[in-house]
Length: 310
Image 1 (cartoon, helix red, strand yellow):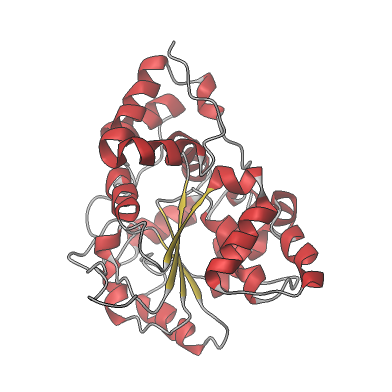
Image 2: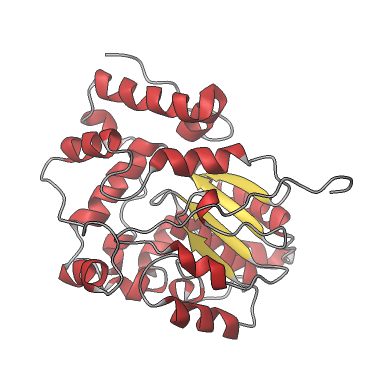
């Protein structure tokens, strides 16, 4: 960009909870070609990490995405461990975050991918993630020194109750959904940010991967594309889940295949009432407006039919 300086976002606060410690960003040194993959959570983060990893390593088998692409603001392991490991990487680095924009460092030197998904689908995926978490998961989050705020407890038996508590508590028991989607939607015009949507990846994986590659300035040879795309399909990732899941899936009953679960949208339609749906839709529209709400629900092409009231 030329002329006046770009209105780059600035970090204005720290965010702490049972999962997050945003202070790690204060000590992170960006490189010119760093890639940051941001989501609220359970919106396709691991899928996009796999896509970026395949672009970086040109379709290789066995790319250890969970090792190479850490959740930088997760409280465990200690930030010194993560920062040292990232500093030693000689490949193009790709990092994930679940922070809102104002709680991280946003660098003009990096490229950012923000992945969106209907919040109702997010919650259904979160519920499985939370329900299947084992004692090791709770110990890591609740017993590691430095916890700020209340510990995380097991979820209720009812997924509808879980959704309603999440909606009423703005992301409870995790972190604010509204802050996350609003902060990234508001900066969507910045030249180093690309919005990606879970539904678009499901609808046209190859096309979306080429769009991501162009944004990140990857130019794989034509003969490498079949392998790159094949290694980003749900079936491939499910079969190789230990490479993508944190600690090979050790935090969940059933292991890595629990972490890479179903990849299905719309399961909430069988459970939520019309009033539940409208309460969620009103919240999203109040947060990011009509255009943003349409994108979050159905992706770039808004191809899915809108819900009909009950």
